Length: 275
Image 1 (cartoon, rainbow, N blue to C red):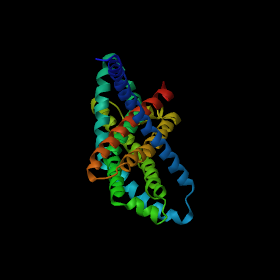
Image 2 (image 1 turned 60 degrees about the horizontal axis):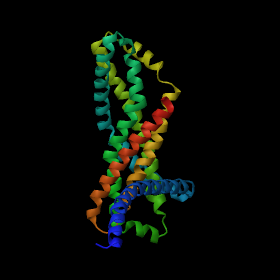
Image 3 (image 1 turned 30 degrees about the vertical axis):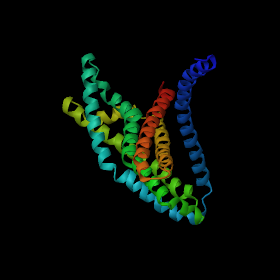
Image 4 (image 1 turned 135 degrees about the vertical axis):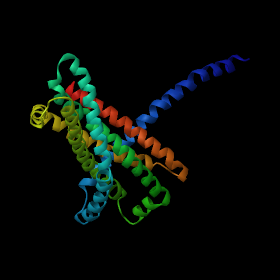
């Protein structure tokens, strides 16, 4: 074998794995950059809305809030009720060993308000609304509706993405409030069943824990999750190009990316604010 051919094969064995590694790093960074650019365009389009566009925006926003929040409310409250009761049972099993049952309500409130509420609501919204948004955007892209909007002079970002982002923020914030209240109610029911605990003492204990910091983190996570989930899912849906067979992979990728975003940003915010 000539020396030049052997050298070429040796370089190939080195460069091919390096290229694969570089592609694995480049693609996620491209996705993050694309999502950040889309977010900037949506925010810019939001502040450029004209007065006559608000009527259409209000109608689409109302439909989005109805689908994302109102129709998801029964599922959210059932999950919250069960999660609150199960969480308190687990906490009670640990604290009763050390005789610290008096801290049950405080610990439950911190777990639910700081972590469980925003996290599980984000998962529910991704499973119900995020996947639906990705599929809807992909169908509109393949059917030519997005091109039709551009041809008629309608800004697709203002018409499609702005109301979904605003609706996501309103819906996630509302669902978090209902989830937290229902989960704490489930925790109280279990605590009242296991301990001689009155509603007055339970509420007094919660009042000492729930403060401006907890409300701020709830609002911040609702703002980030509610705005990012619709836009991230829509961006994956709008990437389809040729066939309807691209829709299921786009929906799956949108759900996975949104879940990673929720867990990552939720962990970073909690570490920054409570670390």
